[in-house]
Image: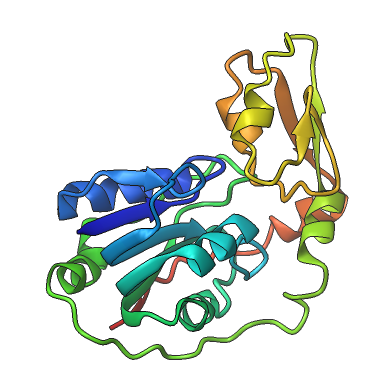
Length: 226
């Protein structure tokens, strides 16, 4: 049984997973909602956060029982870090391929910017799996310096008057980081609560140092690990 999992906050990684799903003829599954952690071959799509793997994805990989595994990392600014190698090491399963794809930053209104021609080799590898070489990539020295706290300082999520206390944000948050529209220290600013609120009652704004970071030139490189 081959399966395609994804983690997505703002929706960009979900859209890429849906794109892969059509090519692979596999229905994408939200990894935060699955109860079955077994597969023959698994493909995991996730966003890069501060050149790191998001906590819900780390937890899922540690639970997953799969013979073969591949990773697709979406990134929005200047670096995807070394997430593919770190994910492969964390899994311990046979690594058959990886790709880092520019999809625009979650905190900006940017296009996804990926084309089929740039990912066709990754799709073919999943269809015809064999062991891949996981080449290390550059990771900035500050990437592991309290990344979640840095993001909380740079991005503020607020509740407006449209909130009717429906609890959907709390139900959908894989970090247990929000209650009645107010976030706590567990928040990783994935923006799932903002994206999925039916009342549009949650908003976010970037603060000064995040605004400065977001002015950096976009890196539109597709990186393959085959």
